[in-house]
Image 1 (cartoon, one colour):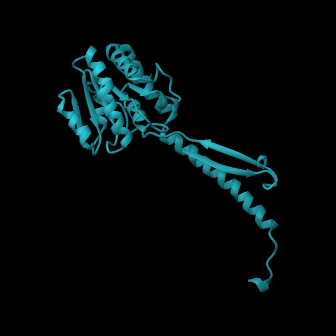
Image 2: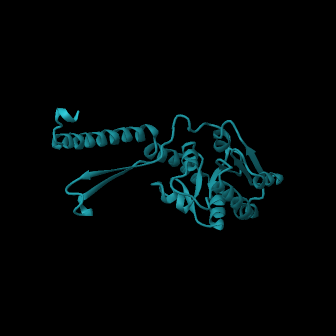
Image 3: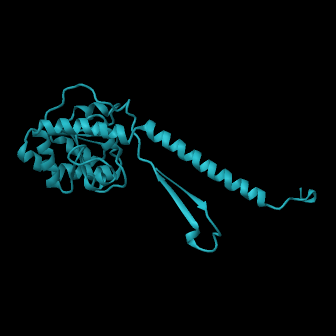
Length: 240
């Protein structure tokens, strides 16, 4: 979320330097009461990928995950399973469910239970823009997450503590396998991932900052309007 406004510092027609641009960037927010960890048994070696499956970027990513990453994971952990959660999966994704190791749910009333019970959330987005809410939500739920490099760059999270980062199919497989066999790392990412979202993406905090920003913009424009009114020529009664 970005807010942009201009402060007039001089004759706007004289130079571009006369514009002082003040840009405020607010992070995506997460409802921490709704997306909260719960004590429940995780499905051993279960991986989850979630999102609206009619969205082309999610479809491309799910296919990449199944065709390029999972075979590498299965070489080391044959019993690993993948759950693809999200509404309106196209035929190409539905067919993946023929493999007993892959579950394609289609629409579900509540994604949280699928994400909470998974050992790992993978988000190897093949192309994307900005922050991926699915990543923040998984972290808020306490599910360790492995994300693509471009997704990590949009966050202030610390790789190795809050989440894991990968750039290639082999790196995603390696990070996932390591996470599944390292209980201490799994616990650290679960705990620190949640704490990161609490500190950086709390909807209450983001809302307070947004309200403050609106107030500052309103005060700025009130001053500009008052100045313009005071400088405007008085209208005669004949012009009314």
